[in-house]
Image (cartoon, rainbow, N blue to C red; front, side, top):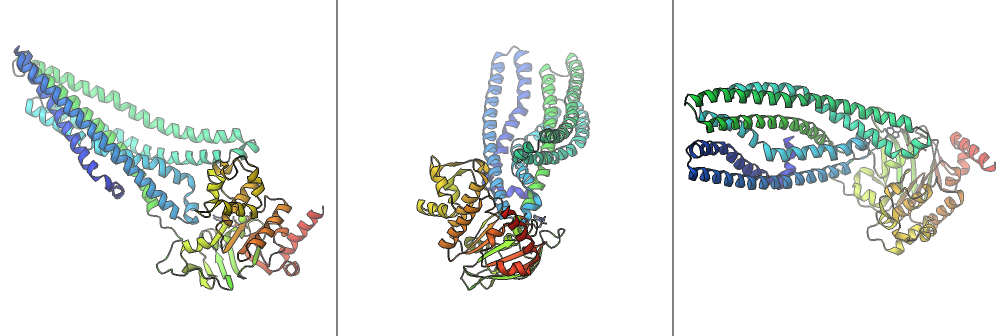
Length: 575
Ligand SMILES: Nc1ncnc2c1ncn2[C@@H]1O[C@H](COP(=O)(O)OP(=O)(O)OP(=O)(O)O)[C@@H](O)[C@H]1O
Ligand SMILES: [Mg+2]
């Protein structure tokens, strides 16, 4: 946990000064009962009004200074803990951004969200409490005992008995609750997962009339969480009555013995009151210590979860000696015996892929669903590393390029394109930061959606809602294609991006691409024969294996898979 404190380095001053001010306040708080005892014993009882006023004034000033100290400490702790949280969150986001698809798949988004929100909140709280209470609480509990001994060593033994009694009680309660808090944290994770899936899949849930079942699923997870919280709360609730009982018992004992002492003249009234004050102070400080332990255990669990992210090394990263620049060669892409597996467990998704492509050519990739088309194209911008064989781009090994160079020259329109909240223009600018309006319109023109955008009231400034929900599937696909085009990539990959388009628009789009981007090597993944038949080369995949690499006419003869797909679709079209 403490390794994370390096993110609070900037707030060193606040982290050191905060507890010092709180300590000052605690010193005043510890001295107050002594002044009160004097006020009663020497002022009121002796009818000495000047001492009474002096003491009252001193108490007032001390309280005032104490208040200022507390305010300063709270201020420092807010600045430090909020700053620490912000720093941690930014750093974690940077780390997650460096992850490749492998790590993102492994963690899943919901736990990443819980970690960056809830877990970091816990850590932030722990730092705030560290500044505010870690010095104060133990100081006050020990200080109270010391003061009791100073006032009357004969009675102070009541403190010495109460302290361990109380500590044992706290220990047992915490022993029960702390592991439960850890469980609560894990359950929060699963609640997040279920709620996340439910909200993002709300349309599907309605379409399948699964509302009741899904509501039950959420209810069962929330019930589960509620039960854990209740158990913790029930045990923690015991803390209050039992501590009050012990506290009041100790006070009655103090009053009894103290009263007797006053009667025989061994003690003064004010001193008894001061002792009672110290007793409450000590026990309250101990309760705070117990709460601190809970906060820190939770923070400890959170720190582990945050550290897990920080300690995960992205599997696809830049290596030290990658100096290859992008230089166009006749042969732009060459797969030799490429094998690929998503995870060790999943086995090979792609086996022995062999083909090459010339600059400016168009490649079609076709194959049944699950045959590895998306897997294959994700290897080209190095979203994943290959596991076997070699993959060359412009005659250089893919590993010789930095990720930045690769992704600057290769654009991918993924199967499920995502538009970001903002406007159409802000989405297009993802492709090129400083693109002019003309460039935006040209890209939209090629992507066959200029007419559609023109018809919108605000044109390029039309609002895009989260996930592009205010657009149809085909509109989203075309804007996503325009976003990729604006980058003017050397290799453009469309992963089933034409699937939501009608045949005519699909054809127009491909023609526009061929006419206006002659230099670009185009890779079109599709389930439709019509989308790939005019490509220079077509790669046929079946169950992760290559079942032909040729043009349409030849493939009809040599590839069983291609022939079968063609037959099924041509029949359909004729119908
Ligand atoms: N993240 C992943 N981890 C493990 N296996 C995966 C992962 N993604 C896909 N797969 C598996 O890899 C195989 C190939 O998937 P891929 O997405 O490449 O198919 P595809 O040809 O693009 O299919 P579609 O036409 O439906 O898009 C499938 O069997 C799939 O179950
Ligand atoms: Mg796919």
